Image (cartoon, rainbow, N blue to C red; front, side):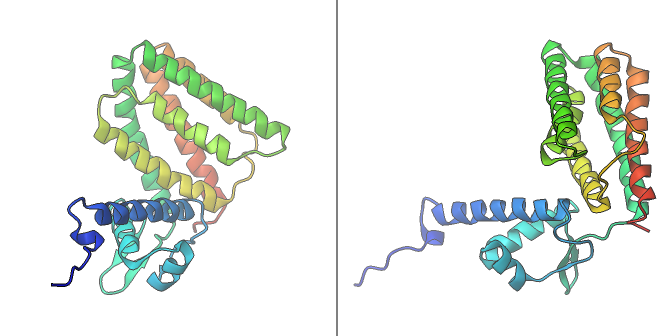
Amino acid sequence: MRYMPKTDSESPSGNGKDRNSTRASTVYDRLQADILTGKLKPGLKLRLKDLIERYDTGNSPLREALNRLSANGMVVREENRGFRVPEASNEELLELTRTRCWLEEIALRESIANGNSDWEERIVLAFHWLARAARSNEESAKSTSAEWEEHHREFHLALISACNSSMLMDFCTELHQRTFRYRNLAEVVEYRDRHELEEHQQLQEAVLNRQTSKAVELLKKHYTVTSQILIDTGHFD
């Protein structure tokens, strides 16, 4: 009887499945990054053939990545019509902002109540890197950068990281990403008459001083002001 080598899917070690999962994760990360940064425009139909070529991948990892993205709202799946990039609108941005304020208020209150010295150090360090990135931007005559955005995300997540709920953290992270997409789509290169780093510093001080009501108010104002600035660009009418 002729010996037939096992395929990856037949292998007891499951290496084939593991490789497919790794490829799917890579495609997922690249697709999500392109949607968040606006390289894939709102409403764009995601044709499998085009995406296979764009990301140099196979059909199976691509479909897995698209299904995962549709589960968290980063891709829209339409019955019998495939996938597309979500539209962007003022209404959705306002809903995102309201929901962020609701959820992060809970997370922030819990973190202030439960946070220890490690949590405080995490916030201080996150603000340090945010301020450093802001100074770097000023020196290079830029108001935003990938570095600043990364430290901005880390700072806001540090504030709520002691809420003792991984599920709540996951929801807040997802909402941050979806709001980040709007920041990119609006192409705001400058926040006129706004001192954003100062807003973050005031927020940090209120949190570390355990001034819960003040911290919540500052956080909500920070998000709503940003939302209104993005809406005023007229990109999402």
